[in-house]
Image 1 (spheres, rainbow over the protein chains, first blue to last red):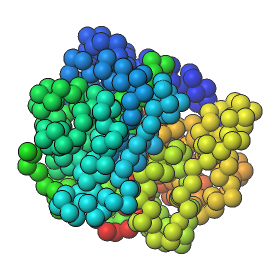
Image 2: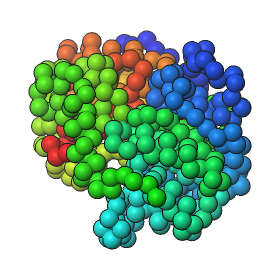
Image 3: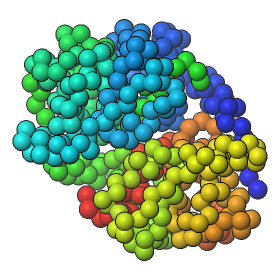
Image 4: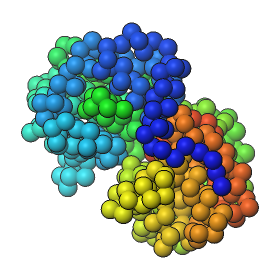
Length: 212
Length: 212
């Protein structure tokens, strides 16, 4: 028989305490961003993620306020959407992923881009004031930035930029950090190759509620 | 306008080529384990993950054969299940997560363990010869090992052990590696705190198909 902690609440408490004990620099962050970073670290098991996270000064407040106002959560993949804990959301917010919409494949072929990028164009009706969460696809993030810059899509409140991987991921996140101020969109990014659905969804779950 | 690769197939090709160029030791692995490790790295953006991955010698062959024989894929969380690409599965394999079964909350209270651990007991009808995938919950893995050892559950073909986090995750994976041989179950683990839904689902997607 194994010996291990079997109380879920105690596991959470010890987990977050361990993260706060081992992660330098958290105390310098505003409370909303602090709990966001802690939860992103919790999702990946790496305290050094803190060094790669960069946010605009207003990100925490804007992300939290958007969710409290009922904003939609727009996700690049179903795995990100699956990671958003619905009962934490403050206003029964819609959590949407358009990647499996039947129009996406044809539209991707028409615009010569990936399916995840094409799926972004189907966000138009929900994007004003929304929380955008990109956990996988650099192309979705690049394409969204281009569409926002061209004023072909309404402006979201904030973007979680956490594409993961080896081709375009790091570049897409630097591009978000560079272009977001002129677009008037708050953002958080995970610099470099790291990222992914779990880290991205964790940011949403932290913005959604202060409960740990 | 951003300049970036917009061809999904080319992004995949360059991603896997980059991983193989930068990751030492892959050539020593059998072909199924090699592509499994590559896809796990792809899911997290970290080539050094290779140093934390340990598998039993028969894991690759057993995992691949189980899926080809129609085995169920039993996941600890819906996020893991969401990450399994259904069209890659060779036999329209069922992908199951019992965590949201209405019986789970009461059963967790009855056995004094977490909901993810309690959910494992509902796997009995599908577990013989199955592929088990634990991407989040150490308690699910510990409890599964205890139930297998007590012969209270039928034996799966293989276990992907990738719980993530700070409390019990590393210990649960070492426990799997230690106990699996006597249980007659093949396994792969990610040593330490790293792991998670994306890495765990990636292992399934690699076992399911050699297509990259």
